Length: 381
Ligand code: PLP
Image (cartoon, rainbow, N blue to C red; front, top):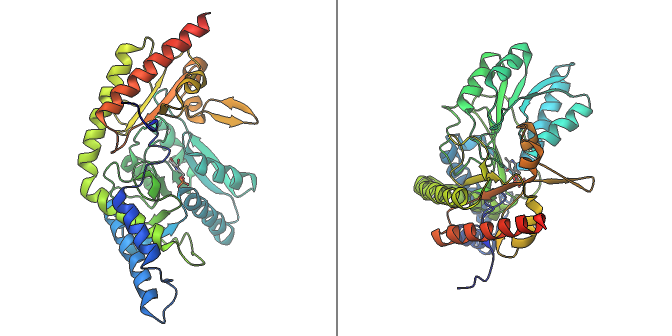
């Protein structure tokens, strides 16, 4: 049967909201519409309670404290607020630059915030190396921590190759050397178990639209006892969005493990189909530690954009390449991994999620197989 819309396999970019989440957002907008800052009537109290309840659901999902949750307008604004606060702390209590270490494969939100602070003379920045599979070089990280770092920032899971990083190990190295440990857990929250207290995460950042919640809502969560207040929200908060994030978190607590199990099986099936039917496929990333919904592969003799042009109305995926100064460049993640140029230029990121079906997987494999084979054919002519 012909599909009305392309098959969606770009769940790292964003996820469709769960209908139960959308129902909560609609209810909060139309019925529980009060301003949480209005303390003269119950409408305000109800709205404030909705925010508190959302903080509780999120705290449960990540093993944090609800009193330490601050909602933001997404992960990017959360990252910016945290690093801006660090820059401010530095200017208040220290006169030298803050020494910050980040992995070379962080999201551009972290890379840009840090690059800005470095240009402004606020941070001394070091990058932790990764190997060809995108795994962090822990010896290099420990060496940099020994040399002296105030802040270590390593993402929980990578948004391109899907690697899940050994966060607990990294936080213990950071703490052993007196650094604060921050993790951008945007791709991990709602997909894998997280416990901020046990894993000694000082600051965690996440975003609702990556786990079936609304766009434009995120959070910064600070570990209890850490003397750090990252943000003071001003203005009327996005109550409906926050309540939607809370509902999405509540559902993930209940359903995450079984959903991710199924997603992992579908990803394995898709990988098997692609590897057996397309000559030269290389699967990238850390195959032993990656998100269940991630499948990142290269076909080194095929420019990914030529394939995307053939399939964009049938299959939604991502090449991960970025347009810099009008020129397509492979992603910084693949460059940091040192992938040869043909492998980076022939890279495809597929992201599966809880709404992906077995039929879609079979069909997506056929679409890719056919498009790659015809692109190969046209390149030979
Ligand atoms: N960090 C990571 C790892 C991401 O994958 C993303 C989104 O792609 C972000 C941060 C930015 O999130 P938001 O869209 O909420 O600003």
